[in-house]
Image 1: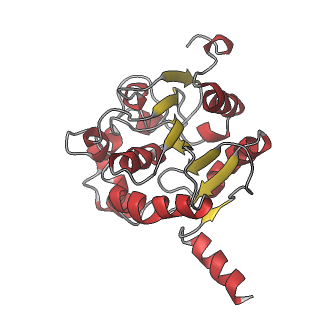
Image 2: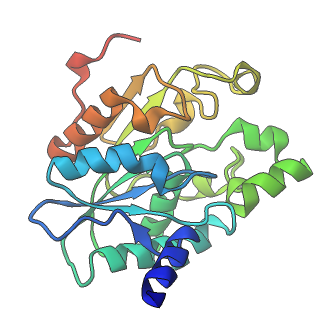
Image 3: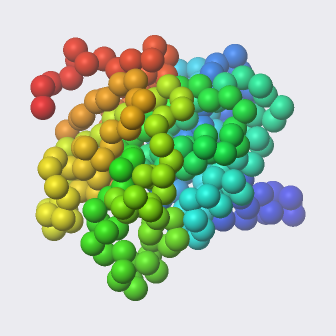
Length: 244
């Protein structure tokens, strides 16, 4: 009983992966949520991938408590090792928002042995203007923590320092917003948090824009289908998408 309680506590504070799939012949895929979210936000994706035969590790990490470097090194990398102990097979990733920057940080330090394919959902690969605008506000810094304040668009921000993608990556972003006030601070098409332009990344293999918002992109059926398509084939199905 004590061991079960301890495991539940560790999961709650982000020290253990959750929804790790049982060993299977399917590809290994790690899910990483965004800032101020938890692994539960990725649960629909996790279930869909598991049903498709993927061996799924849906990681929780304390996104607002530490810098991106610390989150990647001390939380996410160990969680991946716990999910797939001793495995030398490539690890795929599906990320939401800041989770994509965490994966780029992992790659920059070679913290993961071998990367497979990566699908980033609404990643601030060139930062977010919202951090530029509100990052000096005490309440903003309090809510978003160290990592959130590293996501600006200046040359000193973490996304701008990490460089091109060193892995095979497909990016899906949205161009619908549920917050017109925040969107007013973001130039061009955006999802309420990240612009379409900012989601792009040098070295990406494919890019897709779907009419969804930042908050719910990971739960959208079309996004889930396209995510699975890229993980399995390395490309998105552009023919099935309406012109935007």
